[in-house]
Amino acid sequence: MRIIRGGINQPDSQGMTRHKLQLLIYLSALLLSVSVFLPLTSFPVYGEVSYYRIAQLESWLVIGFALSSPGLILAGKEKWSIISLLGVWSVLLFPAAREALQSSNASTLERIGLEVTAAMSDFSTNLFLNMADFHWGGFVFLAALLLYTSGSILYFIK
Image 1 (spheres, rainbow, N blue to C red):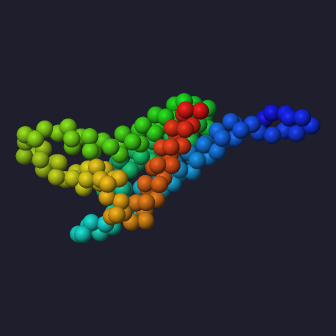
Image 2 (cartoon, one colour):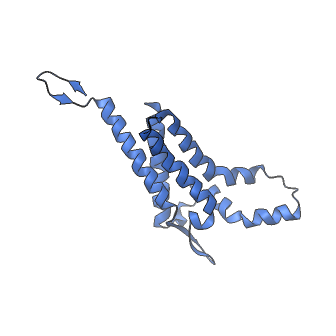
């Protein structure tokens, strides 16, 4: 707050912007945490799927990382909140990175394991490429992810 002529207290613009970014992070982290349970897309035999239905452990990690950012901000550790953002993106991109780094001469058992996780890696690889196949929950998930990312980066920069 700064005092201007006449003794009226008004919040300064930088403090207000920081407060709005905090609010954006809180709301987008909450929305991202909820959107992992929403129907993202549908597969012909499997039906409607959510990120939670495809990858339960990864969903809980996304929720944990996303909600740790507001917790760190409220605890006064604002500069550490960028780790939460990096954690969310690491969890979402890990299957695609793992698949890209896999060697082509894997054993039969390893190939079977790769086939089991193909749905999750296909989803994470094509997260931004197959937007036409998204259901309403997929758009909510994508919007929450982009809002959380942009809010966290802007907050970290300021």
